[in-house]
Amino acid sequence: MSTDPKNERRSRKVTTRSLRSMKEQREPISSLTAYDYLTAELLDQAGIDMILVGDSAGMVVQGLETTVGVTLEQMLYHCQVVTRGVERALVVGDMPFMSYQVNADEALRNAGRMIKESGVEAVKLEGGEKLCETVRRIVDVGIPVMGHLGLTPQSIHKFGTYQVRATEPEEAAQLRRDALALEAAGAFAVVIEKVPATLATEISQALAIPVIGIGAGIGCDGQILVTHDMLGLYNRFHPRFVRRYAELGRDTLAAFARYRADVKTREFPGPEESY
Ligand code: KIV
Image (cartoon, rainbow, N blue to C red; front, top):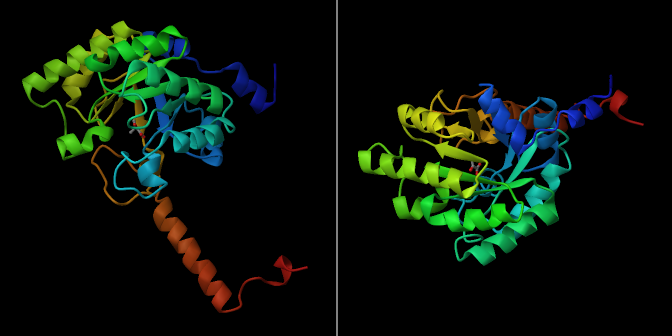
């Protein structure tokens, strides 16, 4: 048996197929976002099953107000540096706004660039029934696609709010149709964001493919959070569905302030840090 953790991780490589069997065996799927090499390596070492290079990079890395301004070239860069740090997890690249909506040909070309130029193993796009032809075309050439329903941040200007989605029967019925349509089009998984837990549970039970929830309750097949949120690094807003597993924003600020004070008082560097 290999004792090298790198070989060990590689031999347990997560694929779209293994995610499906995790669902079948009722093993919850763990997923978080990454935008850089170091974080990706740590997520992989922690055994996270799926790493999403989310276009949330626009907000938590670039400081944009929304994800709308993120470009394909920027996503390619984030995806390239993330895949370098990963041996085991399945890496999914988010297709940015307007890289897949114009028509299926353009979507296919851009999904191909994500896979070929960055090494991600699958792409994610926001939308349901209306995008199914595009999803089918991308899947047909061998690129796995993950859908994203419920709160779809790229449509923020249409909805005008980040409130809970599908609370009304009509929107809930559309969400069910969208999820079923994505599965029929060949999607390997669906992210469902910020919808009532009962609805997400029902959809998870209705689909054979894994449903990954974010603010969608415990009944989903897996969970995803934005890493910068769960580490307490991003403070612009704090949705109730985010559980903070660390306070790195607070701790990092304290470290920076201590360093500054040590420099100002000539406490740093000491003799042991000098040559
Ligand atoms: O961009 C992102 O990080 C996402 C997750 C919130 C699912 O789409």
